[in-house]
Image (cartoon, rainbow, N blue to C red; front, side, top):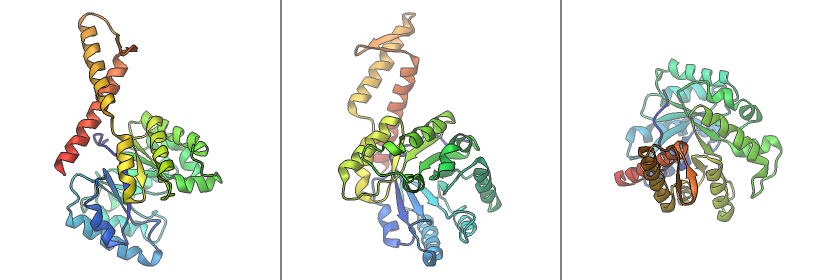
Length: 292
């Protein structure tokens, strides 16, 4: 039960403990909102944050934005209560943290089923070495997984790696998880960028993730949204090229040929599929903007 593809150029974490952030989220030009009950919420505020998120989702008003709730891990004192509170109130998906194996996915699904949400899609956060190493078994564990989200901050810490602009310490992990996601038809979103003062490095990180093949980037501040949206949206030149590729190969096929030349490059059916995907993303983005 894979959900149909949808744009996830920008996925903003919104702490559930701050009601004004939840309110502001309704006005942001962001593709997905992760209403967060986990890391940014202090233990003494967990119950209040859960109440805030439940109230916000029930109130609605988020428009086209995908609503995801990141719950606390099931092994914590808050995880199961989080699920019981948010499973049936209209969220589009539940994001489970620190997923490290197929068994973790099955346990998450079993917990959701137990609170009466057997059809609710899930997302998985890959943020540990075991999560990366077992990315293939995680991605293939269930067709209810609609997105893998990279937790690069925790992963960097556990690898004892350094944060560099070229992201060299992360490239293997990013590529490995990307391969697993694509093998099973799962969307995948890059991790957050913590330096809010260096937008040059953030923009570079967005474009690197885009060039690797990621669908979008998770964010920690609203002013990062336009950079991510711009990086992961098809460019006008790409749209025109996609149209030329489809038209040229259609004409070539009608003439009994399986390939064509477009802008000096040989194209075949696989390029048509990529071109159609580009146009689909563009049309979905336009539709979302029109709805807003």
